[in-house]
Image (cartoon, rainbow, N blue to C red; front, top):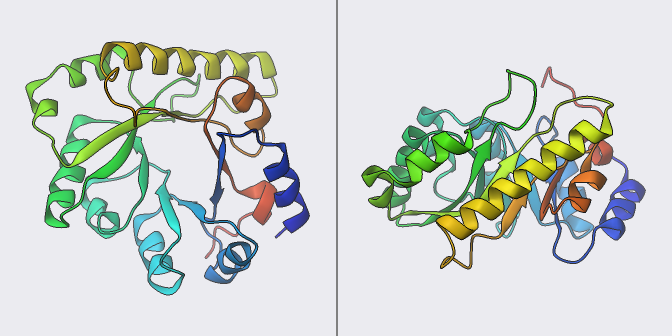
Length: 223
C-alpha cells in the first residue's frame, strides 16, 4: 500500500469530491491501516467479501458497493451499506427496497449508466432510466433513495474520449436532476473516475472518485 500516493491523491481533490478507497481483494489489515490514517469510505464489489470485512473492521466505516450487484446478494449488504453505486435495473432496485424494508432502513443508491464503448460494462441508457423513473413500480419504492448517478469510462489511452464520456454522464445527471429530482436535495452525487482517469473525472464534475490500485497496489485475484 502506498500511503504517500494516498496523501497525494487526497490533497489533489477539491472540496466537495470524496475519495472511495476501493479495497476489493485486499485484506482487512490493509483497510485497517488506511483507516488508521484517516480514510473512512471504502468500496467493494463482492457482497460476501464486503460482509466479512464489515464484521471485523470498525463500525464507523462507510461501505460503498461499487460493482455489479446480483439480486440474490443484496441481503448480505442491506443491513449496513452506506451507498450502492451500481443500480442498473428496476428489478435490482425492487430487491434493494425489499431488503431495506426488512432492515428498517432507507438505502441510498446511484443509478449506473452505460457511457463506455465496451459492451461488457453495465448500466442504463437515458431512455431506459426515464421509463423506470416514470413507472408506477418505481413510485412505490419507499425504502430506497436515489442520490445521483455512476458510470465507467472506456478503458483507453484516448483522454478526449474519456472526457467526452464523463461529460455525457454529467449531462445525464443534470437532465435527471431537472426532470425528476429537482425537489430532492440528496440527488447530488456523480460517481466517476478511477485510478487511471480520476483527474479528468474531477474536471468534469465528479463528486465521488473510486480509487484502488493507485493506493493499494495491484490486486491478488487469487484471494
